[in-house]
Image 1: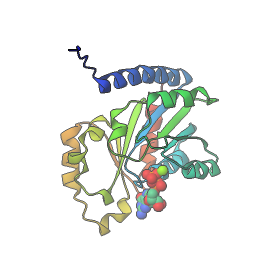
Image 2: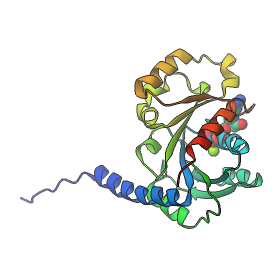
Image 3: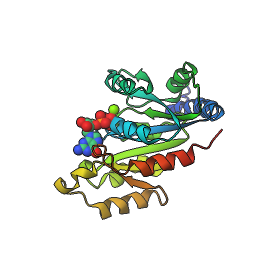
Image 4: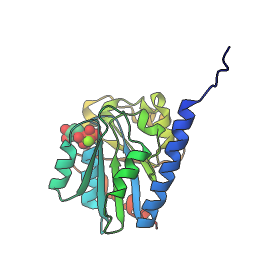
Length: 219
Ligand SMILES: Nc1nc2c(ncn2[C@@H]2O[C@H](COP(=O)(O)OP(=O)(O)O)[C@@H](O)[C@H]2O)c(=O)[nH]1
Ligand SMILES: [Mg+2]
């Protein structure tokens, strides 16, 4: 009979990932670049939100890393606005991890202090499980998702440092129970700020930009 060595693969993967994430985090702090991991389901308005926030950031340089399974559609779009944007394709993986970001930021010249937004793969589950070296996690949800998401996907809500509730222009057309949603959010996270916005009209993003500017005083 052979001895069987039990290895907790997930634990090993996470500790290796977290170790590299710490390097990314301290490098970005040294550059004076606040790094934000932007998470949310596909089509929720992640790219739209980045465009709206970046337009409203006063005197802060913005950098973007776009994470997608395939394509560079969002990167092309953001570059057209003059935003320094870099593409990562995972070709199947459902989240970005710290080694991917480590390799990406090594190749970016951060000429000025500012903010690096990393748009994670559209998914409400896996991205919440992996640190990528960010200073802050931004979770974007929308009134079109239904109000039960904090109850069904608790980890993303627990870990969020800021929650953006998007597409409020569509509120009259969907049955979004805001009180139920907020009770679910507070059940997971007592203190996280929740900003209501519309990516379509731009409403609400000034307060988000101000919040980020306040948090960007690092390094
Ligand atoms: N009505 C409305 N549409 C929005 C809003 N925000 C984003 N969209 C639309 O939703 C779709 C997906 O947005 P996108 O930013 O690409 O989502 P992502 O996949 O999370 O990056 C696009 O057609 C956007 O124009 C919003 O606040 N209101
Ligand atoms: Mg996008």
